[in-house]
Image (cartoon, rainbow, N blue to C red; front, side, top):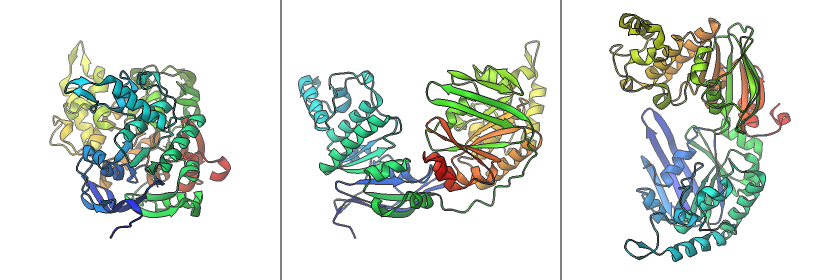
Length: 503
C-alpha cells in the first residue's frame, strides 16, 4: 500500500554481504519538494540504502515505489532514467574537460552520429547553471573551479538527467561557511522546483536549517522518521547511539607508564591542524570521529606516509623526523592499515613472505636470504597468533579476514615495534577473530607497548580504550578518560558541538 503524497517509498529493504547484514528491513519515504535528512553513525547503512536507490546495489528483498508504481531498480542507468541522481562526497568529474562536457558526458548533443553540436552543448549547460543561480561559465575547465563550484557542476549534471530525486552525500564536508550558505540557497531553489532531496550529513546544526524530516538508521536497522521541527539534537544523538556495549570486548587494564610518543602542534597541509597529544607505555589511546575527520590521515602521518607542514614528534624523549614509512619503522612504529588488502598485505605473496617483508634485512647475510631463519620466524608467529593456514607458504589472499589481520600484526611484532597504530583493527572480521585481536592488544600493552586505536565502532572505542581523543575537521575536538566517556559525549565532540554540551 502506497502513500499518494510520496514520490518515493522504500519498504522492508534488506541487503546482506558475506558475513554482514548491512540493511535489515529498512524503510524510507520521500515527498516532492522536501529535504529528507538520512542520519546515522558510520556503518549504520545509509550509503548502502542510497546505493540501492541509485542502482549501484541490488536489494535482496523489499519493495520500492516511485510515484506509487512498484519499481525494480536494475542499474545506475535505470535509476537515472527514473529521475534519480546522486552526488557522492568524492566528485565524479573530469578536471581536464569543460564544465559543459562534464554535464553531458556520454550524452552530448550531435549534428549527426559522431559530430558534436558544440554550441548547443554549451548553451544547454549554461542554461542549467543559470537556473541554479550560480556564476559558472560552462566553457571553463573543471580544474579551474573550487570545490563548491565543482559541487554545483555535479548538481547541474543531475538536473540535466531530469533528476526529480537528488541524493546528496555529505555535501558540506569540504565547504567554507560562505560556500555552505550558497549551497543551501541552491537547495531551497531546487525545493521550489519540486525536486526531492535525500540529504546525508553528520552536522546536526545543518539539519535544523535545511531539513524537513529526518530518518535515523542504526546498525542497519530503521529507528524512526520524525519532522525536524518535532525533534531535538539530543533526541537525534540518542537514536543514533542508543545500544548496549558489546560484552565480548575483553579489555584488561595495563599499568600505564611514561610517555613514549609526544606530538606537538602537528599540521599537514591544512588537513590536520595543531594536533597535540601524548601516548604512554601500556596505554590504548582510542581515536574516534566521523568519516573524513582526519583519523586515518593522522595515522599515515605518524607512519611517515604524509608530509608534515609543521610541528614536532618525540619518541622516548628524542625528537624524530618521520619523512617515510622506513623512518617510522626504524623508530619503532607499526601501522595496521584500515584497508589491509590494498595497503597492509601483498596478496599474491605467502604468509611467510608477508611476515618477513618489512624485516627482510634480518634474514639476509652477505647478500643471501636465510630461508631457515625466515621459516622459523613465520612458524613462530603462526603459532603465537593462532593463524589458521595450511602452511607458511599459503598465499594470504586465500585466508579469512581475521587471519589476514593476524598476518599484518605478525610483521610488526617481528619488527620490534613499540608503538602500534591500529586503523579499524576489526573491520570485516567475525566476532571470534575480533576477540582474539583484542586479547592480542591486551598482551601487547601488558608487555609495555603502546597502541593508538582508530575505530568507527563505538563499543570497540569505549570497551578497549584507556583514553579517547575525538577528531573533527582535522582537529582534536575533545579528550575523554575511559571513566567519563559515553557514546553521547563522543558524538557531541564528533559533531562539533560545544565542549560544555559534551560534559
